[in-house]
Image (tube, rainbow, N blue to C red; front, top):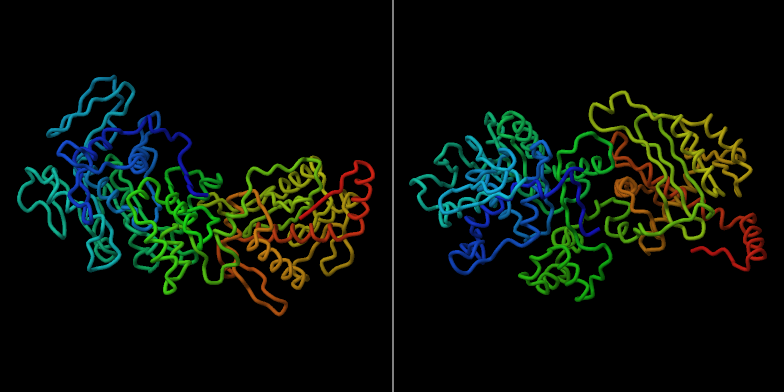
Length: 567
């Protein structure tokens, strides 16, 4: 999964304020660093233009719907360390201070925007732009002693770039920038932002993967809430960051969870743009060519100007460095929490979205039910290949929609029956908790189709599997599946809900080995589909070991001359 995008269904760059990108390319120069002072536009000589990826990101920030409303009030851009994310944020902050960044109607064609020596002619149907009245741009930093990388780039441009021309003396300073037309750009820390009344038209949060302290989380909440105050100014937030460490509950991690809910259709809101890029999951860290290719993938066009070999040797091959930290910073992958059951790269490496399992192929099912808090899930597993399929998941909706929510048991029953009506189910275990009567009825209706009985610590039953009485068996299944993931001996359908639940799972030792559980008893991070996936793989192994399956294989060979195989 090199690129993860969550966009509004109406997203189209054809309805973006292209004048903003043109303005940035005309006026901005590169900030502090090896190429400081080099312009983006070649009108003054040698230039280093924006690459296509960053140009596209600027257009994405300013896309509108057909009614002329900007699609996003929050934009999160996740890129590897050294990708010049803060510089990009600085360019956008400059545009928000001076450029025509708000919708002003649709162009008939031929209209012109002129400012200083910049002239932009609109195409027919293109959105027209206007400047913000009294822009207030806040650049958030994590340390009291820092002004922040974004603000440093803004300040450099206003002191050394084309925008510095004709600026009144004293406009730009280390603590704030007073804009000639009214408004200001201000660097802020947690303490300062909480004291201000909040007139922001743009808030830039740099490296929110570091916002793990209570005061930094509160800073984000306070400023984000302030962005709702100036309706006519259409305020918004821009977050630029390297990927987070799972389990730290950083602002970026929570935002990623929000993006997944949007992608899964579990919330009505759509005003978040999430754009994350990471290296491929399967990379041999000892192979220089594979490492170079992975870094080129994660850095995109910017990889051409980086010392890729130097990154490999000093970050990945240096025995003093933690490889997991190097993956997070330079591959931009969310590395596992210390007690994580498995890792994001290992799970992603098992993804096979192209695999198709025929309707008549023998499969097994595992069901884990809940009433209201935990999720309810149904997983399938192909007997022949071991491929995992996410068949259904019911979770409490986010926000007010989730108040008083309970799983629709009739819908759960409908889905189970639909799977049995359309698939060749040969094994089915269902946790009895909260669904006892349904499980009993499923056993009566479908038990004669199943090759094995689910005991679960009780008397023999066609379907019922009592999780509370099967710690030894389930622990063994957890350990076996973790090995299969690590060795790449399973595949799954890449479902984002399944991935989220699997990566939420934590290692929990017990007297029988290592099982899984949530982070804590009251944790909102669900793992129910992970439980179902482990259970489905367990049921498959039981089917493969059963005398009934051996008889079926023999009959199939006699009938077709083909032996049913498996991994």
